Image (cartoon, rainbow, N blue to C red; front, top):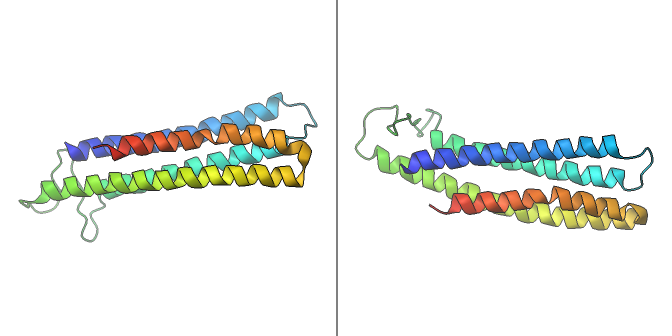
Length: 167
């Protein structure tokens, strides 16, 4: 039961992070299509949307690595888990508790990493807005708007981390 829940939650985290990257990409395309030719804040806004997109893809990689840890690869000391929860290797009396422990540990690690990514993303947005404001004062508004849209990835990371942290 714990293994199935971990697989479901980590798969959901992977898909949500991929979807967040896709939505930010579509937002960038929409900004490009709707903006007039010469707008001062266009490049800063797009750069911060790209920053959010990159962090969303890193979050997807983190969730994918956690999912791979739960499923196992069959190499080394990690045996893959069959859909029924039993390991594919030789029968073992303590395989189910080991699988549940591995699944719980993977969920906790992914939750912590997503929390760290959320903090780093927030700091990166603040630093990028400050850098754009110093470099070009007219671009500060575009940078701020791009950061507000891109920082929605922080909300996604926090919600996913909370979901994964509760057992």
